[in-house]
Length: 240
Image (tube, rainbow, N blue to C red; front, side, top):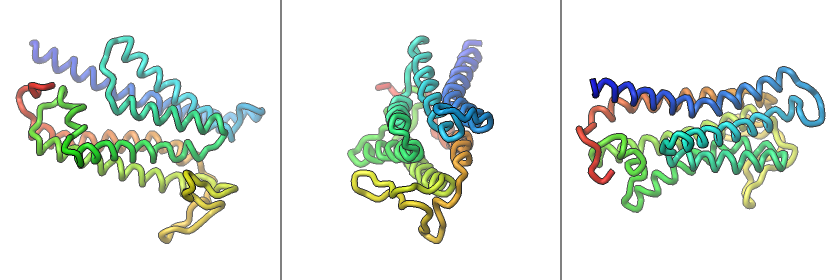
């Protein structure tokens, strides 16, 4: 009976965590689409500013998720803190400067930063993936290494996927987009690797794909469950 209750509690905690991850994204998509459809057409709230309002909602809801965890004295995953800082930083820059490019590239920076943490830790003989999840799973070192590599490559793939999405569907810029002196995107439409970017005015496709990205992440996580269970040890690591 005790093991059954523990299993139910664990399943409940995981379900709450998934909803905690989803709520800010769902809020972003709902706010964005509502403002695009209603199109109040005033100086502050209109179709063109929908992305800024949706990003603001995403930031507030993310802070709410963290606040709720603190209120219930739940541990806050390190990656949640990292991603929240990136979301808040680039989101606020985009809103305050009224520059959508910061919002477009935010997922790219976020995913590359997570990948850099994973592979950077492995380069110095550590494994940040094990450090973060060793209190949840007890796995041999080779399994932790394999999972870290898989997730590091996944984050890189998601960064490339975001680059493709926003460059394809976001409207072209009136001036070249540069960061730290580097050209990020030319003005207007341009060709690269046989593909044309900046020629579509379909920002909503990129915005609504946030839900699709969450689904992709959940599917990838689920695909790694069999490997994790295969190497699962009986007791958590002693140094957890």
